Length: 413
Image 1: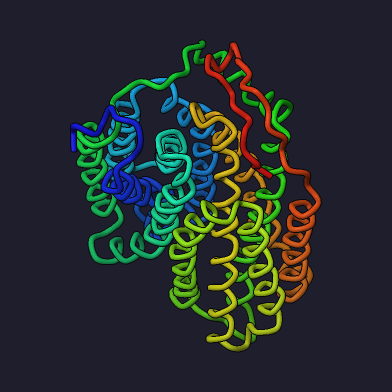
Image 2: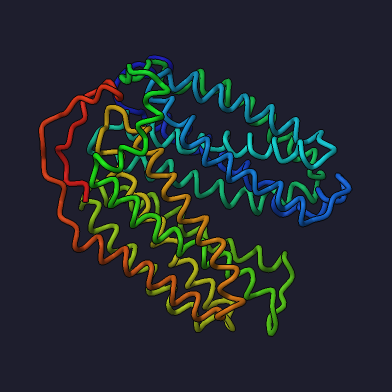
């Protein structure tokens, strides 16, 4: 496989490796969530305080999106991702030995930053995959990210029950070390085309939203539906934990298995985006997700019906995400990582607001109203997509901050 490392394009074996690596890296930010009570007992801390420490993970993730993901367009992806996996493994190992909650919070932030390796893999796919297979490759990597979310929440809890949460973290730390070595052997070794100052490039991230109308469009509609996605899943846990259901945490956690549909949807969406275009796939995904969200508001009494609705909901939004993100990567295929970072920050902000809203909204308004608001957010995203004008073709422009030509020759609406 080494002979392919410096050639254009990405062999399918490399793409599959990237998906597996993205799955493991993404899972690390979710590993301890099911073990919050055990962590609190081990550190002699209240559960609420440990929950606050865990919140440092998403903060670190957002910082990682800004500071770490753009590195893959500037330096060797093999070395950048290997270094990130190595640091991630060390942070997990240190967290396994922690005895106090403040050091745990610091390490959770570091783990959150390291878990953006999935976004780094997506950026590599956007830069090195052939244009006619860009979305297909992105779909495979995104499937790995989706699997990592499920593996972190479900597999992390299972391993913690079997081994203890400290040993579980050590096992994953060793796996990260193995992947660090594999990244050096498998991922492309050539440096990217970005030549400007790294810090100057970071300072220009907000300006990308001013320069690229397609980025603003993709970020706005993506933030809308990720708001809805997180609102549904956060609200579901609250709704099922209250009367008349009063389900235990283990049973509520099994509802996450409905998210398996999203893994398949990402791969299908990638193929169809390459064939039919992003706009059609986005609209189809939003129509499916919006209908499922609306129906789920009246189906909570039926476990089977709720799982079907959640599966369709996840499938629709994951499909829309692959198509939407492909439009961002297409804006500058030579150096997509900074654009991907800017997009993911906006996307993540929408999700964070949805998580906060969903849990409170169920308590304030009830489950049906919460899903109706989610449907409305998805509908707005669909209307924005339908009414947006395609981005006109233009000649490449050279950005001094980026140091590379910026082609605008595709319909990325």
